[in-house]
Image (cartoon, rainbow, N blue to C red; front, side, top):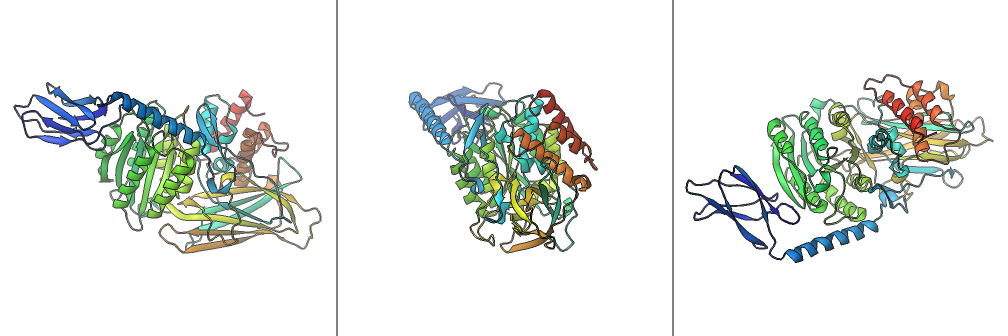
Length: 566
């Protein structure tokens, strides 16, 4: 016989409960997830459930094959008081939390429909005579785009702080040349006129990572950290999460390992490290999950990292994949406290992938903060198609990091550039603590990824014709299992093309960036409007095998029709 034991008030699983057959010596103890399995002797008629803090309970075996037993705390009033106090403290910590992600000073959180987003203050123009150098962490997160798509499909206004323009731009595939055979990364630049501000120019910088054949990728040691708390009970949360992980499991190889930790109140190991060729066993564990209880994110993260470290594969892909709506309400709950925890854990060499689900109480600010501090990436899954994109079509780039601590420094020639503005990347701007980047945290880049950044530039009117250098890009990064820092650099020629003559990828990325500015109601949008976005995007679809660029057109049309962008 198997079953589960829970607290009658909180419905959290109860570990450490002794389960015994009355008048017999057979006894077992519930695991961390409150589960037990016991062999019933022929004369067994009743089970006794005992725990020091709960009233003992006797249950008739009868015809059960699986039972759920609720135990009453010995001091019910005290238990309810403890729960209320814990929730009050968590709420207070959360209300005073901040999101000092990457050094954009003053970033807090804003709540929309009980969803929280890190406050974004748009990058301003910087005069080159005051500071000719711009530093930012490279990143290929795409969560903002799919989250924005969710709002559009629901015909709801998009919260401005949900719009991270760099994540919108990097959602799409770009056909920049791959690195040379002996290189891990390649840096490219394009310079052309700005469509929404004719007197300005646009500079696009793209970093392209080496493409790696899936079969030659190193073995993976994955820990699925799955939120099964009460807030995950709706169809667009746990059921979608389970479907998404089924896609991932079906792409695992025999040399890969997967463990599953589920958490609601108390975290528990649902599946120990299991070979990727035992797909049925893994899938059954995922399908077994059900939602209920509070969200003890802190304890769950610690347990997941512990399991990942115990099964660590040298030179392998060691990663915790955290799937949640981010609504942590037990343990450390502020962004800052959770960031500190993740920063400690990343020293183990285990990376972090955060997957966001759901709506209504989705905590975007938390998940973005955790992924950035944990040398990880962040995606929002709004439907099964997005799960297929992340875990099937982009399996290698999602789960396999080829470069970490990646950061860029762009120097602008004051002789030809009056001022510049980085479009997006507000929470990835790096302070100029030093010029060589040694102590600055960067982001990660997955296999085959393109990380694209756009600058809007105001040229100097009195430019010397003979000065042909617009600026220079320097890139620093480390390989995943190496502490040595590598660098690349690229000179940017001062030769701007007309916007119409710019490459297709340049023009399409510009249309996406402009839509982001419109959604943010940016003061820098110039003459840009929805029609301009549509006209640019229509003429720059290029080779759109998966149809994502055509979908972008449909979303812009929906926004225009609803009046959410003009």
